[in-house]
Image (cartoon, rainbow, N blue to C red; front, side, top):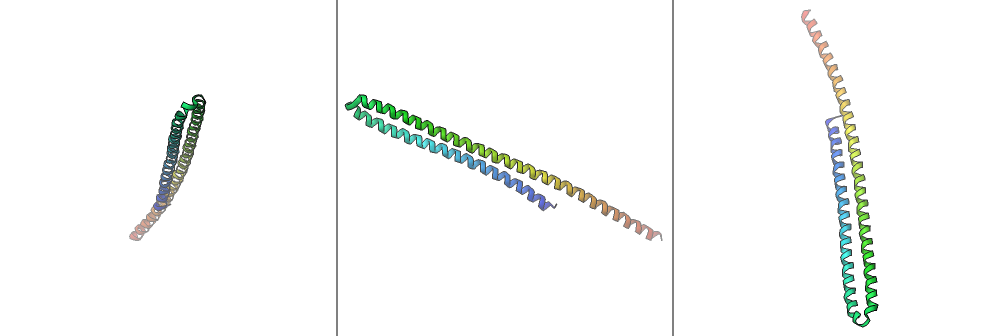
Length: 153
C-alpha cells in the first residue's frame, strides 16, 4: 500500500468524522427549530387565549356566570394543547438526538474499521519492505562477493 492509499484512508476517516459532525449539527438544528416552532405555537396559543379572555370579559357583564364557565373550559383546552405540543416537540427532539447518536456511533465504528484496515495494510507494507530489503541486501552481498573473487583472481 502506498502513501497515497494510506493518505486516502486517512482522508476518508476524516471525511466520515466531518459527516458525523455535520449530521449531529443538523440534528441539533432540527431539534432547536422544533423547539422554536413550539415556542412560537405557544405564543400564538397564548395570544389567542388572551384575545378570547378580553372578549369574554366584555361579554361577562351581560352573561357573567355563563361566560366564566366558557373561559375556564377554553383555558384548560389551551393548556392541554400547549402541553401536548410541548411533549410532541420534546419527543421529536429526543428522537433526533437519538438518531444523531446512532449516526455518531456508526461513524465511529466506520472510522475504527478504516483505522484497523490502515493498520493491517501498514503492517503488510512493513513486511513487504523488510522482505525487499533482505532481498536487496542478499543481492548486494552476492555482488560484493563476486567483486572480491574477481579481485583475487
